[in-house]
Image (tube, rainbow, N blue to C red; front, side, top):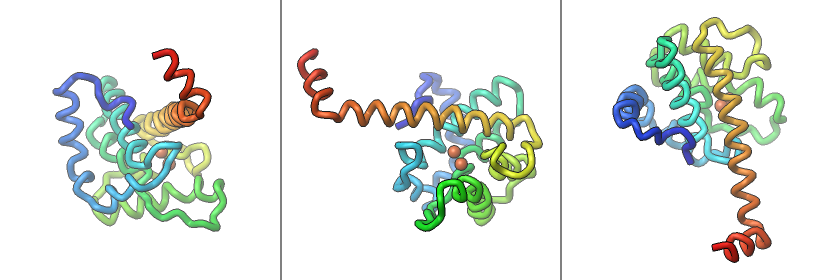
Length: 169
Ligand SMILES: [Fe+2]
Ligand SMILES: [Fe+2]
């Protein structure tokens, strides 16, 4: 489920896809489609964050190509450690995502900062670049939207709500 992917602007979408193409070829990244994240998949969440980053950074004349690329891999991890508590996972996953990303790509300082600091203020160190701060905010904005969307979808599946929807058609 992608909230923001369809803008109707095919030129924008073409450029966006060109930027992220190398990532989409990686099997380990595609495995994030199997991971739950904010009620949707980690893959869809990452696509949401990347596309908003692309449109916002492009409009602000920032380094949108590097920022979009890094935004797509900001949550690049498939390992869920069962005995790790939620808080520890929140703190640790940016480091895991960065390590995974560096297995495949030579990242710039800007991209490393985006991935490593996207959980600010939970992470140590403040975002060093405007793009890092934006991805950090976009990630939170997107997470809230995804959780609300997911909750509404769950409510729609309740038998009583299904009956109401059926009766009003
Ligand atoms: Fe994250
Ligand atoms: Fe995220």
